[in-house]
Amino acid sequence: RAQYIDTGKIHWIVLNASDDPSEAFTPVFAIARWAQQQGRYWDILDTLFQVAHRPPSFQADLVARGGVLERAGVEACLRDRAVRAAVDADFADYLRLKLRGTPGFVVSKTARDGSRTGAIIAGAQTLEYFQRVFDELLKTP
Image (cartoon, rainbow, N blue to C red; front, side):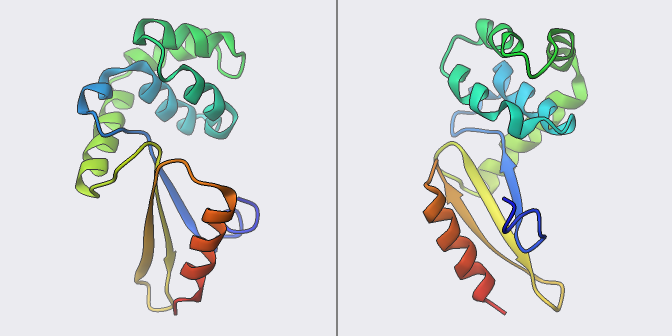
């Protein structure tokens, strides 16, 4: 992140969605989106992956127990229509981009002429894989 994203060389967009549209209503996606809005996404990401396969009725409680996000905030985000709309938009983008696997990553670079060159990365990958993709992307004019 420090070498590529924080420097502005690569734009990284994380879509909080999966290949199963019925999962759009599980709390983990709303919590992920809300955590992004709070600037706490990277702090909570490991916890989200740990609870993602638990029953939806337990997800919010398990996240709140982790201590990164306050319980009241987690509960509020699950009632927030704007968060729900953002989750719906993530799922729509996921389908539009024809991503496969969770997580899905869209990385891009802005060319001198303002156009974007990008790559889609499906599923969890190694750091070395991301570095190869980023380095290849940076080679394009």
